[in-house]
Image 1: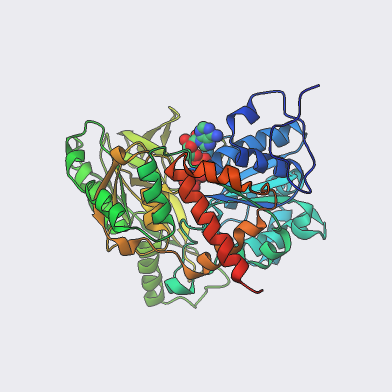
Image 2 (image 1 turned 90 degrees about the vertical axis):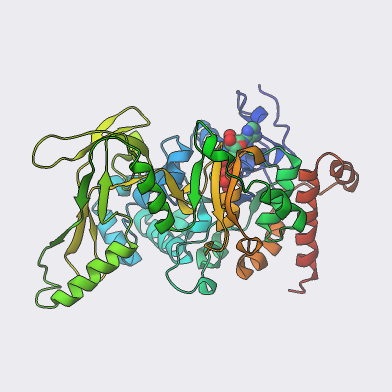
Amino acid sequence: MSKRSEAPKAPGLKLFFKPPNLLYNQMDPDQIRAVDLARSGKSFFLTGAGGTGKSYVIRNIVESLRRDGKDTALTAMTGCAALLLGKGAKTLHSWSGIGLGRDTAETLILKLRKSYKSKKNWLSVDTLIIDEVSMMTPDLLDKLEIIARGIRRNTKTFGGLQIILVGDLYQLPPVNKGERDEQHFVFEAETWRKSIQDSVILHTVHRQSDPVFLKILAEARAGRLTQESIAILETRRNSEWKKLEIKPTLLFTRRADVEQINMTQLQKCKGPDVVFKAKTVQTPTVFNHNLSTPESVQWSVEKMDKNGSYVPELVLRVGAQVMLLTNMDVEHGLVNGSRGVIEKFCEGPEPYPMVKFRNGEVIIITPTTWASEDVAGLERQQIPLRLAYALTIHKAQGATLDCALIDVGDNTFEYGQAYVALSRVKSLDGLYIWDLTANAFMVHPKVKAFLDTIDLLDTTQPTPDPQAQASELTISDQTYLMSTICMDLTATASEDPS
Ligand SMILES: Nc1ncnc2c1ncn2[C@@H]1O[C@H](COP(=O)(O)OP(=O)(O)OP(=O)(O)O)[C@@H](O)[C@H]1O
Ligand SMILES: [Mg+2]
């Protein structure tokens, strides 16, 4: 018989036997608490700063639950994040079969009932894990909850599914087309209130180990960079990166800057430009007959070209670094965000690009369509690729990078954006600053208010031993900072009479 887990005992939690492998030995105590809570069958929120191993631990959760005989769906909010998770993870949209998710829950239930694959997904799993949940809208969570009940024909919350929501709310919020301050967050969902009674906070950062950098990161996350930290970051605003053999990943806030950098890099590839222009396709439907005018079509095409994920005029060359923009073959890891290089172009009337992906496969990329939200039957058709020398910070959320050049200056427009950029690299040595302003590091007031109470939800946290805490303070700045932040949060929460 295997021995009991060394995990701290948590009130109200069943004790589990350690699985007969090294899984538990490779995790820190907070991570072990998360696995144990997952194995108890409860739904919960798993959170912690960037690099505390949230994504790492959910891979172990999948493994543990599988051994317990449970079927788990591992999903993430973006293709890039799903790709980083591995273990067959899919985007939430693709796994759930909801497409863009714009239809009502009732319409989606009707559609999904006709799709064998999506129905099977919903019916076969016991647990649904969603990573990078800070990017999820409350509407989407509520919609999925209704869908789960409908498809599973089970009136319990989420149709009886265990849900594990994973993410750091100090990172990027859901994409918001309106005013930044009118942003809605996933924790405002009715479903969150009904199903998330527990949380686990991971406290140990594994991505970085330098106490100086960890202190800067903790300040940046809380939106309180000190003058001392700014001075240290300013020393990284140099041009040494230009001399590096392996160039840093360039992380910029705005797509326009990213595109300009990409074009400059493209010019360095030999060979002629091969240009692909997006085409408009309009299929008459009962809904648009006689309703769309040339002006409305023109307006809609312009809007799609401006906001869509495709590049309206895509210029490529042999040797260009590219990124896939659709989930082409999720099973084989060819998803939104997959990186590759242009091997050559097809001969014949359509010179479609042949891309060699990191998994070694060479695939011919043919056009994909993007549907208009405004004019029924109107679509834009384009090769689903973009240049990948520089990335937007949105695409980098979840990644661990060796070396990055980041723009966290006045162009920063989203709460959490600057912190995400800064927290991607493992050390200050690998960090280069293009532009920096302290104002870029801000926390949305709603997030702050919510997180002020979150530690109360960490029900599995063992009662702190004040003596142990005092001695920990001397161990490293990291532990010191994390415990001061936690003490801050407890103080604020207990002052709140409600
Ligand atoms: N217990 C551990 N032991 C060793 N390495 C770990 C451990 N936990 C996490 N790591 C490593 O730390 C790095 C960051 O982990 P991970 O990407 O899972 O963090 P995260 O909390 O998901 O970050 P983000 O919020 O940026 O998505 C990874 O390289 C991971 O392998
Ligand atoms: Mg992660």
